[in-house]
Figure (tube, rainbow, N blue to C red):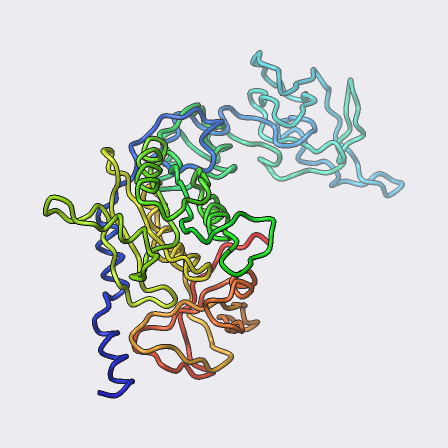
Amino acid sequence: MTATADAEAAANELTPLADYLGSVLRRLRALPPLDLDLTQAFGNVLAEDVVAPHSFPAFDQAAVDGYAARWEDIAGAGRGYAPAGTPVPVRLNVVGDLGAASWRPVRLTPGSCFSVAAGAPLPLAADVVVPVEWTDQGMAAVEIYRTPKRGFGVRRAGEELPAGTLLARAGSYISPALVAVFAATGIGHVVVRPSPRVVIVATGDELVDVGRASQPGQIVDANSHALTAAAAEVGALAYRIGICDDDPEGLRGLLEDQTLRADLIITTGGTGTGPGDMVRRILSRREGGRAGPVAFTEVALYPGTALGFGTVGAEEVPVVCLPGDPGAALIGFEVLARPAIQLLAGAEPVFRPSVRAHLLETVSSPRGLREFRPAHVAERRGGGYTVQPLRGGPFTLSGLAEANGLLVLGERVTTAAAGSTVDVLLLDRRR
């Protein structure tokens, strides 16, 4: 058998990525709902639909500073001309002032108006607010030089959001603007899915903490820092535990302790089949004829084929095991851990948005593996997108740091020619 045939045979034994993700995500459930004060709700996902209990605006009010009047009293303002050629104003008596804190109901009589501030309750019978700059700004009486359209400067009760309006559906992300909408319609509490608590653990005797350079026999732990940031970016409450040596009892004890504070545990390192891959050896070990708590699967994914998923502890907290290579760990997070966090949070959709883009450079890809390659995606002036693969391939940290997208090449693709159309996942980069 040739080397190519060997490679193809090995690829055929791998689990397709879509099948693997489906089997994992079906085992997860959104976290139980929680009633939160509105001030704490930002960043969470709604667990149920929210309907406006009250209208917004709650009452007829002035939308601008000016004079509240009856339109028929000012309809002729500025339409006639004096002998000197200047427009003839309409003169009204100013019978009072209304601010946003005014609460007593008042009524207009013909030939009168009220001076009003934006947000003030509208006097009964008023159907227009004349902006201050269209008048002489009089106090006891005012001259109006221009006639606005009927209804100008007026906001009617329920004009924007009548009571009973569906404000947001379950699964919606609570943004600052949505918080404002809830507050304006009289909502003080909402039922949400809590932000998942995610614990990140890096494993390996070779790991040392940041602040120094790697040396032979030592590798700086970039993964736990990067994965903690990635989990926080998704909206999780992320906790970096740090480095765990390849000690079986130490690893078991650490994971057991973390089940008390975690909704999801992410480990990095030790997922392979080599002599030092302690995570796989410990968590997949059969005991009493039963399979280990975590199943490790060779997935048709490039980079990083070995992924683990299962539960640990009496609480059966989900655990995701990612490879130790930094590039493979970050890609594994995007493919597996991020959707898991989104699902726990009740967010929809769980996957990043994707676009079809015009490929600017020919690339090759390993047969039988679904490759995720760092790339730069841009909108074309005439519509659509272009995508430029970044140098170094999927393993390069510099490429991942620069990328705003991930070029996706399917299992059957060995070469994607420049000019072809490909799928690209859009990364959330706040730049």
